Image (cartoon, rainbow, N blue to C red):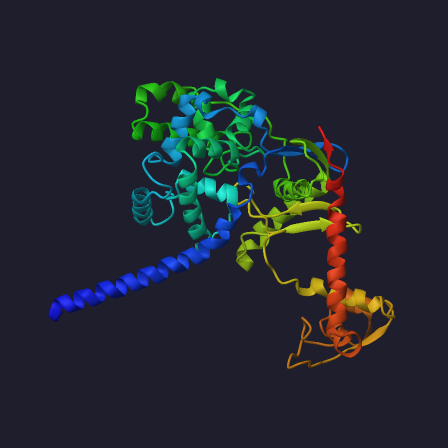
Length: 452
């Protein structure tokens, strides 16, 4: 070949090579996600757990109570239409990824100068709910896309829709449309009207923001958008939705009901781990935990106050907090600012350096090998293996007790202990032993799980 034909052939060859390499790269990224499908993922959460606080009061539920779920064929037609019109109008036309819908969303977002429309299909959302976390990253989106196509290949559209309606978080600590209908309206989901169906369908986008027991005006405004979606999609006429617009739904007053959702997610994971070990086999259990709801509310308020006061200054939008008693029991846990917007638990899943908290392991190792709180060590410049740590104020106090060094979080003292007296191997052993004891203590509340 010569001339433009040769150039075209070479460009096509390069494109095929790069495309193959790119596709193989995507498969490598998706492989860990496919490992999740080898487990019994259908029954992951195939039991219901009622959680109690340290005093025996009910604080929330997790899991799917299947005897209360409603088959997809028995769900109200207006609910199905409201969900599809709002979440995925082309649900029955795509194979897990809607490229037309994605292009339309990108166009709308570019025109608006921000994110006003999402491109994820209902199948992709289900893949995230079943297998992935809410971490925002390209790697997670790639896994989500591959898992969505896997779901489409292994399940019918009816099964996918049914699983989505059963497993999605709906605010107020509820999972699934049936539980949400009971929680917000005190009704069986078969009995909800169009206004209530529209309000439920509006929760999928941001369940905390639009939860009617928290912000009824916002929930009604969102429900009105859902009704408009029904008209725009051609699933209903304006005449069919006008009554629902004029008579919006009203939710049961549950303003005082607050659920420690981040803690419950973590506790539910622990329950599932124990169930996998054969600790119990019933599908309905009651678990008494160590959480103190008074401390939990104080922790949530402290987190919100701190973020409002200092968030802009330090360019921080999220935070996390855990309160653990001496025996290892968790008294409070805050995994983020808003559970409805992000269910990613920054207290248990975020990877962070331990910072000064790791000094405690050094001091523990020292105490176990002859030192006391009154033992004196030099706080002075030190260099070890090319590293020269400094104190926060760039100053040194000379001879100090371990108690003073720990109270003031001095940096050079634990380094000196490690270099001159203990060695890193001993500190590592102490940290690992402490972690084992912590995990053992933190699972104590869940070993008391009993059958309902």
